[in-house]
Image (cartoon, rainbow, N blue to C red; front, side, top):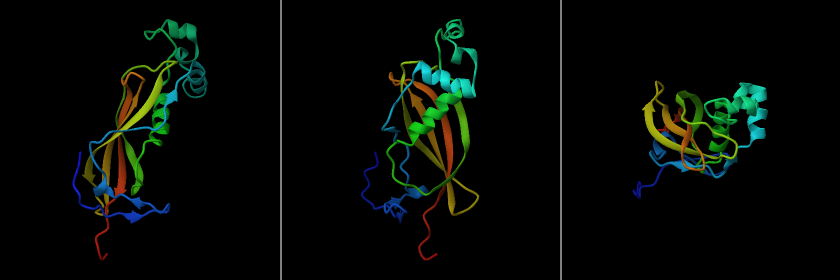
Length: 168
């Protein structure tokens, strides 16, 4: 934990709070979503019927014959849940511009009806950008079940503004 007492220079945001720049983001401190998602058989089927109608996602009989042995959520459904829950992770407004892309997308274990899912986001590293006023922030996004097991994970690469140089 960073216990330095130096102040962080931030800019005002439209909401009146301070915005953290690329240099200001604390690394290595996992934060979990304020909300959870209760996965139901109905939610699994409804999503899959629209977006991934693989038989073990929409039919209990087909799912019973699968290696999982029961209805399980599509990977794209789990990614959607993770993104939604990540928006409830407590954070301070940042000078994020846009996502550059995801790396190392992994589906670690299935999620089934009855699972209670939550998100965990950990800022891992800063990388320089080709434009000097910007930097890249790499964060690990994880979807966890009620047992704390990682279900899905990926690295999110976000372009952020660097703190402006005084006098410019």
